[in-house]
Amino acid sequence: MAERKTGEAKNLDAIVVGGGLAGLYALHRLHRMGLRALILEAGRSIGGTWFWNRYPGARCDVESLEYSYSFSDELQQEWVWPERFAAQPDILRYINHVADRLALRPFILTDARVVSAVFDPGTDRWTVTTAGEVFQAPFCIMATGNLSLPRLPPFRGLESFKGNWYHSGLWPEEGVDFSGRRVGVIGTGSSGIQMIPIIAEQAGHLVVFQRTANFSVPAENRPITPELDRSHKERYRYWRDEARRTPFGIAGHPPPTRSALEDAPEQRARVYEEKWGTGGNISFLYAYNDLLVNRQANETAAEFVRNKIRSIVRDPKVAELLMPRDHPIGTKRLCLDNGYFETFNRDNVTLVDVRSDPIAEITPSGLRTRTRAFELDDIAFATGFDAMTGALLNIDISVDGGPRLGDKWAHGPRTYLGLMTAGFPNLFMITGPGSPSVKSNMIASIEQHVDWIADCLRHLGDKGLKGIEPDEGAESSWVEHVNAVADATLYPQANSWYNGANIAGKPRVFMPYVAGLDKYRKICDEVAANDYRGFSLKR
Ligand code: N01
Image (tube, rainbow, N blue to C red; front, side, top):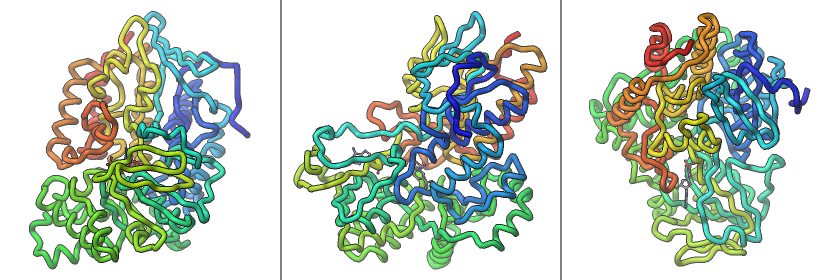
């Protein structure tokens, strides 16, 4: 059944904003509790991130057998993942399968971008408005995603460009054929690094505009054999339990016990070589236990990757440009690639350093840096997202006669547990800033948050309570704690979207909680068990 448009049932028990992996599971949990809930989704269809990010080579950097819902044994048993790291079309197929299996579609409104959400303290209800419709419910759950507001740098002249341009996060559904064309890719984050090798194979010529070199390790992607599928499924409960006990919510990677500085250089090289051959970013960063907290230890891993780049890329000048030197490895999302560095050995690929020679403007026929002009038929922007807060603040969220979220967060997001923010009763965020979110297996974090929120709503219902809101004091302590945990690591040493550094003028605040999903889950459970410590419950 297609997602339906409906004019009925505008009064609900809960409104869920966003029809990605978070929104779909939230809807399912709320239905199971007998609540009337609806998803409002901006896209033409469901899938969230996996609906929009269709650029060539888009795939997940968490293994498929881990990056999937764990709440239903039926689902995890019946679904067959073709590859170790799932490609975007397979993940989107999975999401659609889940929506059908759980009969969610009649409760999803698509093409319904939410523009505002206003809480009325008199009636304890949220009024949520799309371009054409109004919905009301006592609870509003923001499942808007962490990387869902694409960011296009304000390049002069884009409107004059006669060719086609695309953003990785708004890729056309019908795909793009770059065969024989002159293509420019701007950006070398995860999205750029995934699309560049594939576009290079199609394009007549590809120019990669790199401002900051990025670390990347091989995915070592491969088909999942029927034997692996079977053996993993026989022990799925065991793997899921193990994942719950890990900081990333991902099983199969025993935590390291040694410091990188304990090993002699030859032994360290062997360890890194083995990790490089295994593939995967967790595997690599789990080579030693201090890579993300000790700069000297980190440098040993960084230099190993630089040496790999040296050995792969034939032109030493190009290799030098591709070597990251401005941040510790792993403090930006460590990219996973399929032949990224090898791509720069192709005759039809040119690397341009737009750090030393910045992009001045887009021209009708291409792009001009300060010193050179490039003729291009197509430009692909892999320039990232207004992460963590962008999608939330894109909605005008306020309390009638009270604060606006945009004003409250003017100096950076403030939340208690990344779940709620003081002054905004009954407004939940799934994987909000201040929670492990992007520093964990997103699906594991989504499930943990949705379960916590669903249990909270059940508690409120059972006790006849009208609402819940964090206390300012608890929120301030949490914000301090999130910062203190980050400050004890190397993460703040990178300019990244984790701390808003990718957006001019965005407050510089480290947003994910990096103590680990295992520790965080315990904290959330203790808060709930202690009568929602740090929250005020309203009669
Ligand atoms: O975005 P990014 P992304 N001129 O912000 C450059 C997830 N994800 O879409 O570093 C020139 O990382 C910018 O340069 P600089 C994953 O969590 C996951 O690639 O700011 N260049 C940078 O190179 C990831 O971390 C998967 O100097 C400009 C790039 O654009 C997150 O999404 C796949 C520029 C942006 O990199 C975001 O990744 C894809 C300018 N004016 C994404 N402005 C997987 O699961 C920006 N840049 C594998």
